[in-house]
Length: 323
Image (cartoon, rainbow, N blue to C red; front, top):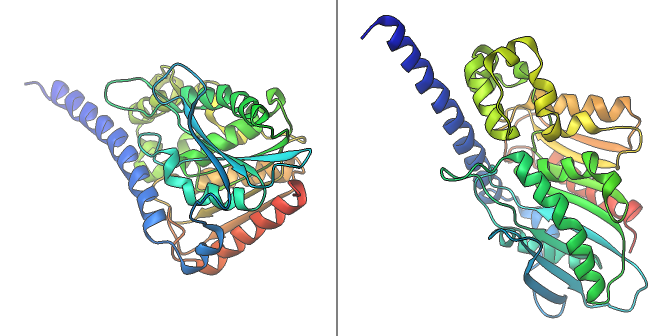
């Protein structure tokens, strides 16, 4: 076997491993986020019961097996208008389910909001699901969620998009990219550790800043379009990843935002979160940005800061989604 062939095979193996490591690391980071929950988090988690309201499970919004949503309707059904809080599940775009966030959704419902958890088609070895296709499923789902709430007698007049990790990324894409097409105003978005931009130089945690082929493959998988190493080198790939890069869609009309990121995150690049922060600043968006300087993807080593993040979430919900 020639040295050139060996080199190409070695590069291909490395590229494949980069994609695998990213997906596994992202999923593992999500697991740690829920496995190491601080004691104060119980304040924002409620076990569902009929005393809170009514749960309508597995309602359809499309033809795909995963195109289902759960709708949480508050006990008080006599108000003229309700805010809808959508919370999208984590899982590295490859795992997870809307049921994983049942206690969070129950908490939102207990506050008086109509709440919804939405499933989306997960990336597997046998399909070509991408962040782009998942974001488009969420875009298609939101009007159906609102229609369902209306059918049950809950008139929706405003919307909060939220989520964790992969779900946070998808929530931001809807809040910034798709808000202008939303049936109701997107008045707030919140979440933690969701990737919001795809500049090669920011993705050094996987060595993508030094390997154009690996970067092209991973970004191709995520963006759902073919990206070449040459496009990585000349910068033209940025237009191809823009549809999934939430920070690129922030403008002066973007929804108020509360986010948290860990500076030692090994699942999604912390440097990308700084681009989101800059975009929010430059466009004059009302936002709060929390930086957990001792934590990775789980935010588990900065209890005080992560608690401040959730307190800010409650503050902004009260301000922009008053009951």
